[in-house]
Amino acid sequence: MAAKTESYDRATEVKQFDDSKIGVKGLVDSGVTTIPRFFIHSPDTLSDIRRPNSTTQPDPDVIPIVDLSGVDSDLLRPTIVEKIARASRELGFFQIVNHGIGVEVLERVIGAIKGFHEQPTEVKARFYRRDMKTGVSFFSNVDLFQSKAASWRDTLQVRLGPTLPELDEIPEICRNEVVEWNQHVTKLGELLTGLLCEGLGVEKGRLKELTFLDSKVMVAHYYPYCPQPDLTVGITSHTDPGALTILLQDHRSGLQVKCGAEWVDIKPVPGALVINIGDILQIMSNDEYISVEHRVLANSFQEPRISAAVFFNPTNRDRLYGPFPELISPEKPTCFKQFTLTDYLRRFFTKELDGKSLAPQNCPLYLMVFHVLFVGLLFEDLLVLSLTPRRLIEFDEGWEYIQKGIGKLKRILEGLREPPFSSEEYMALHITIYNMCSQNTPNNNSASCVIITSKYLKNKYLPRHCHL
Ligand SMILES: O=C(O)CCC(=O)C(=O)O
Image (cartoon, rainbow, N blue to C red; front, top):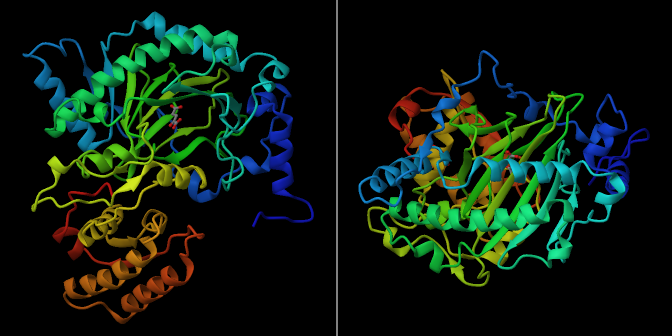
């Protein structure tokens, strides 16, 4: 239930903000010097924010830039496939250059999005809505009414496929550019999904024939200057639910991707596009490729940051999707249960934009343990044992699964330790398991954790699937 105190009624403030249709850009224009309280994130979310150029920031060069020149040549294509597949396996993100779309097109698209968001409020307000009936909507925060804290960005959303909206529904100021961008990303999407299929060792048209290229949505974000950038974010940490995302960003930094325990900047590279794997492709690839959490910091620059992400999803929503049969073998059994896109997207859009959307069903328990151990790697001497119940309970059977899993996990952990857990460790483990069982009903997202001192587990089980 929304918090309501005498002095602060969050739900009312959020509604007033939405009803005003001014977006965060409107707040900035009105001269706010402090951000409204409902934009303030919890210390947990804010604690690991490091701005680009801070001395403790990891090297952004870990995100590879793949040059697509020569992609049609028999000689060069295998190397490109190899680079893309490696990045998709290890990081879930890469940038591409020489992709065939001219810098002037990229600049035109960014300029048109900026133009839309910088129109007078009353012009933009005509598009302010949260439904996609017309295929076009403008809003601030897709999850404004679901999230614990709002983020400092406005968005113009346009359906690009299977069909574009009626042309006169698309704001005139960016109409030509949206249509042009759709043509470019459609072609690029086909090229990239082909390369990604080849990287998995499946036939290059597999994703296309499953309609993965047909359903496309563009979200064109505007991150205005934020007067208190250390109290909020531009977009909270999340993974993309679809198959693949093509992201155009301007020259302002702010996008970060999670690499292990670190947040790494995706540095803006002139002419480049950022590509990332979405949850569905992680599933189709039977966990070979990874869909990774990313976020955008609140913009501390006086100038706005602009970006446009195009998400590719399959069109056929009622078919069952699951890992490619070609990728399933006795050595690598299926990691995911089959699902329909209708169920999957319903789950995604009824929750906060946060974390991952899919549960690993049929997933051998060791993957869950690996996840646990990965969290443990953050600490030199401590193993922090933490399950993310949100992921594990998304599907109906998930709750049963996690209960079974916890019991089994407990037995595994107990059996692994030598000497056995100390009584305090046992106590902590029991408390955690109790907390998980009692708290994590499908409506409760809180995660519990237990700290066990153990170098043994870390050394013995260095995870290959540490991304989970
Ligand atoms: O603005 C960006 O750079 C990223 C946007 C994003 O992650 C999203 O729209 O899901």
